[in-house]
Amino acid sequence: MAGASSAKFNDKKRKDKLMRSIERREPSEMRKDHADMLEVMKQLNLDNNFTIKFGLLKKACVLFFYGRYNDSFEQVAKAAKIIQDQREIEK
Image (tube, rainbow, N blue to C red; front, side, top):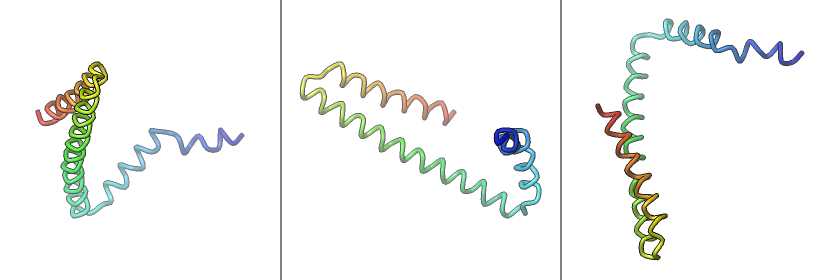
């Protein structure tokens, strides 16, 4: 019984319809601010990716120093994947 009554809260179509109606009611300034915040968040995520890449490469250096070459290579591969993903986003 609880599943049926809470189903309306999990309905994706209903959620999307509600979000569209909220967006239509927002003034243009709010939409512009929202778009600006999305751009700022995108820039911050790029900085976060830089931090993650640097950490992975540092870890790879330490692993290589201790002779764990396979583990070191795996860390470099993870960092390369982040770089590849960033380039695809920038295109």
